Image 1 (cartoon, rainbow, N blue to C red):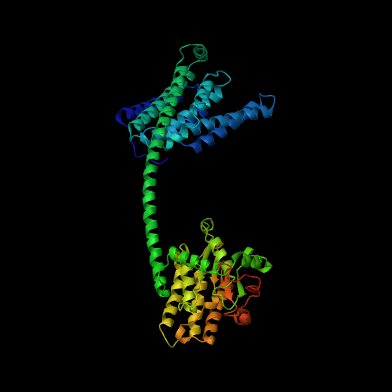
Image 2 (tube, rainbow, N blue to C red):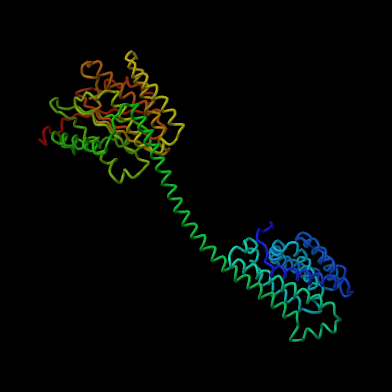
Length: 534
């Protein structure tokens, strides 16, 4: 046991010193009386648990050999010895913490107590057939000892209750030494004297044994009070720690939020994007929904597409795939009759109950008609930025962000150089999109919904049918590359008005490497009522 920092006061120290003198009396008495055997005298020299176990094993083996010659059954004799070993070891193990506490607090006194206890135990073992008195008192003490080891871990003397515990432990120690002294005196007397004392109502052994039991109960009682007090103090400390922890966590969260915002702003500036607002996105969705409703009955378009086995398979599968809906419109219509499919899916995937699922992310891009911002570069940058807005957790992973930063730096250099070939910018943005997808946790499904990819174009002053076609193909190639390179499930729905751009004719130009990564289906509007809302 480690040395305790606390020490005994003068009163308790004097008691321990008195106990030391009493134990020396026991040793003097035992060594000078022929009533005790060398084996019994040897018990007084024990100072460690290990020495006791060795001594007790030897002693019991000798007794078992003796008992075998007198008992009718070897098993019966062996059982008695085994029970004696278990009982003695239990008493020593449970009583030792009290002796160690006194030894540590009362140094240099207290070192003889283990030997004294062992002496009492061996006396009880050797004389049990003649008098049951010592054995019964030891049993009474033993019944009150279990759980005593917990007291060894209590720091004593800092509070009034701890000081009381300290004094009570010393008192219990003193009563045990008193009891041991009476045992040694009892057995140093002649047999007839002991026999008469057994039947005396005022035997000192009974009195001191009872005092030991009561003293141990007092120690238990005060320890229980101290435990309750400590629990209360721990509860208060925990409440303080919880408040500190909450404040700490608030500070950490504020720091992480600031770091996230700084990273996001840095990436947004590199992408040359304005800040988005949820209201702006919602306004776009409402405007497109109203515009389509003025020209088409949405339910008929939904019924036509949802009957498609290929569409249902794409919608329900757990694999990455791009599904392209190509719809042929009346040439005079402003909107695509298949747009309701994209709009409904956007509404479903961004509904409050769906948005609460962190493993289900939906971003969308609604290309406004004849908008000069509908370039491949602007659309791709916008999609990347929206991915970043939804990858807050991933932006905390420095390794992934560093890779993204390098790709962004490359894009910034290329975009600033007017002599750079367009395909280099397109390939770099394609890599950035794939890298952005690595920011999401495994198990995440990301939905990208793009309405009217046919509206992708170059700036109007440079536009021709050829350059516009290249922009549209570059956009779909980038999305195909994202599907095939994604480490998470990526589901992309693209709506194209085939009247403006027949994507089916360019299916072989999308640089598809995996057979099932892209599905293109064309739907005619022959059965759709034109101008139903109008």
